[in-house]
Length: 143
Image (tube, rainbow, N blue to C red; front, side):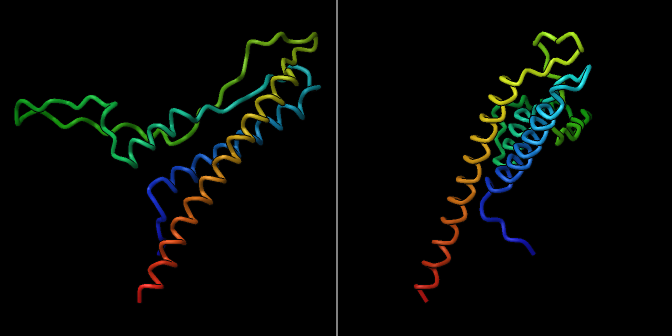
């Protein structure tokens, strides 16, 4: 049996997993900076997290509901499971003579941004857990 601290906790945990995956991918790009014909890869997960957020918080403001004007109308099919992040090749940089297009400046900047977001998520999870803990402590004092 698991206890859900808050509805946002599972969303933050999934975002943390994606941030960790992105950090590994950027580190792989840096490690292959001298590999001929290597193209840097990246991960796009913001759309997946936004969809998950809508599911968790039951936000229907961004979806258009299908109208049922007749009892014979069929229900809409559920959307396919897009719970996986999208991988793509980061392009737009000049490839060197060996075909490698890794730009160390871009990679280190992306790594710094990702690391900052990762630490912000950790701080949010800790704060969320501390709120839960303080509620438990306060309820213990009531009895």
